[in-house]
Image (cartoon, rainbow, N blue to C red; front, top):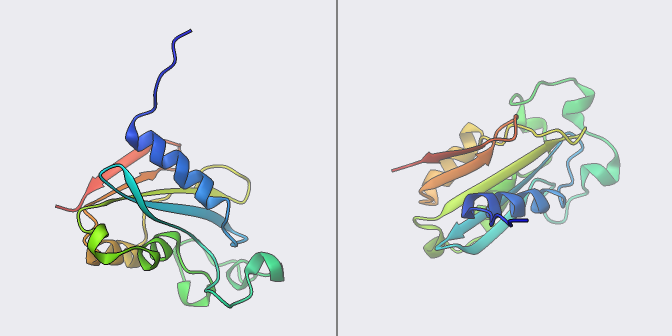
Length: 147
């Protein structure tokens, strides 16, 4: 039997999947890992801000109760996105030229499209992160460069 070692992208996407397991969102679980020179700089998952009560603890999601589609009315959501938390937790100097890996799951455990939303894309660019690697809804790894 031949063992196949994962590529760096596969390796860090797997870590992003594990990070997503800490999510406190009732709708979707996302995890993000910021990496530079194959070293993890920061991680983040989606959930309520520090000191706030998590949606899973309340067993309540305002957007879910109002049947708001994905990608709409973020102002009603209590959660901070995984990418945002990873950026907040990271060192600005280390993030320059880094890669962010993002994985997400629906509440039925199928893959969610982990392409960053417009606001997260702005934050990623502002943090000077140079590329994004994410899992698409079909489980494929997608890579985008911001050069």
